Amino acid sequence: MDDVVIGLDSSTTATKAIAWTPDGDAVAEGRADIPLASPQPNHYEQNPDDWWKSTTSALQQVCAAIDPSRIKAVSISNQRETIGFFNRDGRAVRPAMVWLDERARSLVGDLASELGSDPDGTASFHRITGKPVDIVPSVMRVYWMLRAAPSQHAATEIFSDVHGYLTFRLTGRWATSWASADPLGLFDQEAKQWSPEIMTAVGVDSTRLPDTGPPGSILGELTAAAAAETGLNAGTPVVAGGGDGQLAGLGCAALTPETAYLNIGTALVSGVHGKDYLNSLAWRTMGGPTGEGYYYEACLKAGTFIINWFLDTICANDPSPPSELLPQLSKAAGDIPVGSQGLLMLPYWQGVMNPHWNDSARGAFVGLSGAHTRAHMFRALMEGLALEQRLSTSAVEEALGQKVERYIAIGGGAASDLWRQIFANATGKVVARSSTVEASSLGAGNCAAIGAGWFDSFEQATTAMAGDIVTVSDPNPAAHARYGELFEVYQSLYERMAPIYSGLDGFLKSESETAAV
Image (cartoon, rainbow, N blue to C red; front, side, top):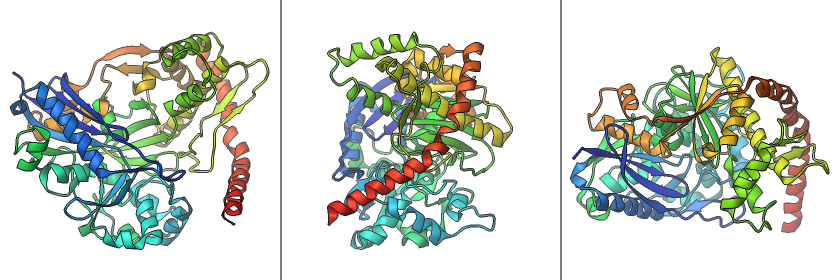
């Protein structure tokens, strides 16, 4: 029987272990959920033991389905910007902080000020990491610990991303990929090493961080103890993978500027690949999944999250089960013309990252009237997210001087024929849906295939293993022209709303202060 590699995808909600052949066929799969806790509003935590428990469960399921001797390497895809705090033996000092966590919000500006700015005014943090100053990079939570929980900070011997922790549990070595270290906000993108300036600012040094290596490199071999827990054979190579966003792009073979990946998941994430290290407020620069080049990535923290919010709140009392309600809404929304008859939606339910970088921003429906129904609102949700995608992609195109021709769509939202067509019409791009549902795992499988020696290059690996295109949505010229008119209105919304966001933020802060008295 053919050899396989495993792409181990440890996401925010679950770990999926999938065995991939050299042709990119999935032949076995295991899955286990990961609990998420919110002990206080906007605080999000996980127990690292649960990362390991879900990993062992998922791997055991795969090994029960296929002979472990067929498995030639394992590589890891991980939830980005989530960080754990450990003793050197892997015991957690405190719960891990998930990328959604906002407890450091008030200190983000302090860290940026401490690091300073370059002569041209660019924040040094942005220049070094490729990330505009924002709450999402994990370093902000390390800085919070230094200021608010110094005893826990001092007790932490290893600050690690999920990839680094799982590598330690599998091999006994604290090590991670460049493409997983990078999202932490502690990594110098050009030097490909932990940044001395940022480490100093947050009170750590390189001995308290995992070793790093390029995607596709072997970080270690499975220990006998890990083999007993997972079902894998001892000595199986563990290969550097990367963050789930970058590896989703790799799994889609989106490695040229003409083709961008579009992940219509809980968050709406897209990436355009380029060879040069470029920084802009219009995107965040992420380390490439092959160890070369970069993704210019747009991220909106609320993608299908908004759709689920709509179903759970606006449609909460609908008697139809979700399996029937969603098709009903989609059919009704499909009969409504472009622009939802004058209703616009600004999709900042969880703040806005690129290009405005404002955590205080919030969502809005603009133009509601008595003539609008929930079907209009549902369509406006999809259109708002598509118009926001047009905004972010056009900024990347302008900076690169090159057009994106098509998106490879993945994630749960990509299954909607209506939504894919709205994306195509609003952006003017072809939207192709990949047969690969688990693109991040397949990207990790690509890395494992390189480590196993199956291919001489990532180009060969992606050509051989990438999924087929199963559906293509071409933009309708008339609808695209109509969306162009709507886009002119949409672009002005944020600037008009910004003072309102500021006022509401001040109001909420005064409410919090009053409650504390």
